[in-house]
Amino acid sequence: MMQNTDIAVIGAGPAGANAALTAARHSLSVTLLDEQPTAGGQVWRAKSTAILDAPNTPETVAGSRLRQEIDDSLVTHIGAARIWQIERSEKGWNLYVLRQGRSEVLHARALIIATGAREFVQPAPGWTTPGVLGLAGATALFKQEMTLPGKRTIVSGTGPLVFFVASEIRRLGGEVAAIITPNSRGDWLRCLPAMVSRPDLLLRGARWIADLILGGIPIWWRHAVTRVEGQTQVASIEFRKLTADWSPTGPARRVEGDSLCLGNGLLPATEAAQLAGLWLEYSLQLGGWVPCQVADGGTDIGGLFLCGDGTGIRGAAAAEIHGRLAGLSAVQHLGADTRAERDRLRAAFHRAARFGMAMTSLGIPRPGLLRLTTDETIVCRCESLSRTDIAAEISSGAGSTNAVKSGLRAGMGPCGGKFCQTTVARMIAETEGCTEADVPPPTPRPPLRPVPVAALAGDFRYSELPIPKPAPL
Image (cartoon, rainbow, N blue to C red; front, side, top):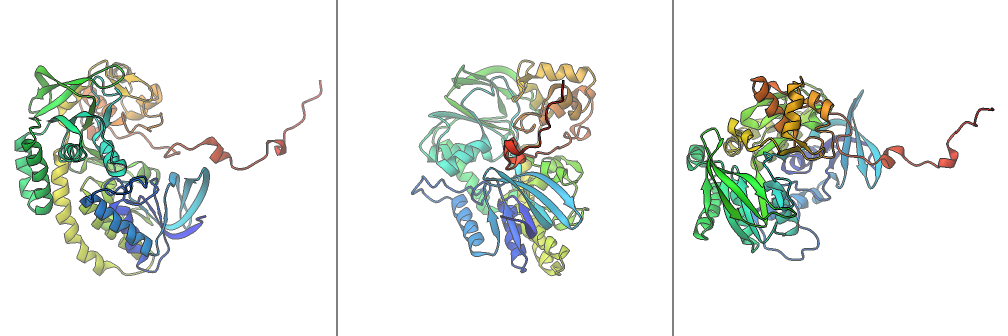
């Protein structure tokens, strides 16, 4: 398979794919790797091959165009490839890749990491009930499988994604029982100056909301889901009004439904950048902890570049341009002069980022959000740890995410901490009287993703192992 390449790109979403395409135009060998079998990432996810015909959406059109560009280019795209270890070598980078059940190594002179974002859901009682999906997870169902989460769905969360999900459910023939969002109308009005820079996206969002209102869907502004009810399936939810700091207040209301789409914004996926040796810094405006970086996707580690939402949540439009900038920076590192091209792209990147960061601001957590997680609420799904369990560990002296992870295994399960570590960090900050910026994420360790032991063991015959003979009696 793959052994050597000039530039390796991890992640085939808007940022990584554009980084690879840009670099390949400068006569360099480029290998694009992604866990998904086809390029496009979460935003431009490809339809399942089982779906023979489906109406086009802006996302499917953009994704199809991108995949065609990759097919027509010199980029080597390797899908269904899981990166589980990143090592710096004397002449570049070694990537350990799990593919078709085997672990192989790819050497690259330069590395671009474009791992995108992950979704955050603030745990509330019953959030682990079957029928509860993340907002981003629901979009994957829509885009790839054209599948509805249920017959009657409650949609709750921050930012534009809550209205996109509700609109898609209706477009696909489902019923939306209610929309519940911590944001107020005033929060959205404050974003208006930034949103006018992209009138096309502004108009699309206005159409979503208008369609929902005309369809008689109740929209509960400045409210949040406080409890999910149901034993083996969602039956209903309780929700309450929020104060200015998003603390629940007042009497609980109830909505019946068989499914719930729930989300509280996106966070940069930083684990690969950390594993490659980068430090993190905290930026509330960019979504939380982000890798330290310099202009145009560069870093202070030679041959390592970053782009897209993994460097801060700026949206798909900015990610595309950021990918091109990172691709050009990698090309420059390998000897070509790309300064003029980067100069032309930079202004467009900042314009696109302004809109994306305005949308990100709608998901910036407020202190009261943590109060949705009651004492009995499960925080770590992998280890079935409640808020009470984690609070006790913090009270005993575990003042860091590493300490909680070591003491309770929170973050050591299959998800690698993606569901629990943000909540754990916020609990530590609340207990210690500091801010989330004072509580960094835990130290990443390989494997970056789960790897079968058989893939690490390689091919061998048990009968050929050098087993010593038993010692004489």
